[in-house]
Image (tube, rainbow over all chains, first blue to last red):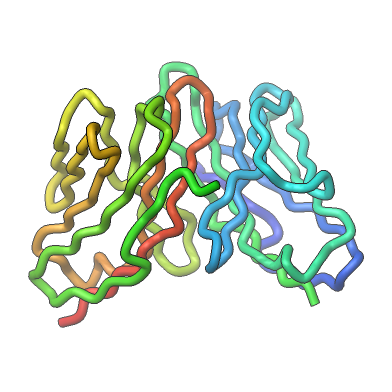
Length: 114
Length: 112
């Protein structure tokens, strides 16, 4: 069974640009969560989607947005990039229905903002 | 507001020793406490998890100890090995579709 796939793995942007990151969950998983990982703050929750609906949202500005498609694939977008947005963005999928609550993480997309 | 506080930030342990990482939480409604392990270049992966109806859970060399009254839980790695060198994250959540809240992580180095 294929794991969670995130693309691109690495990207470099400049301040003011926008970026779109993609996540393909494990087959059959309908929940996709996004986390931002930085050395100083650890893993911070961005948002969660389930069946194309945003179910939970973390404490991030509106520049951070996401969506989920009917095939459970998800994208997140960051507009008007700031230097502080440099981070590893992790996507995780899970199977809430009868599942253990375990999150299965991808390897992340490392964003560098110059 | 940090809901899960993890310590230490980094830890160096001799091979064969015991690694201990501690976490404290604030929300008494939390009822699911997992630990995730992350190797460089990889995403975190579930290591072991506990619910508050038990005080201890052991899986191989890994043990979670849970103290509900103190709102603390800890990970013990017995007979630590160089292959255990990784970053460990504790987390907590309310079961029933609420997001995991993570601690800031502990970088463990096991030296021979």
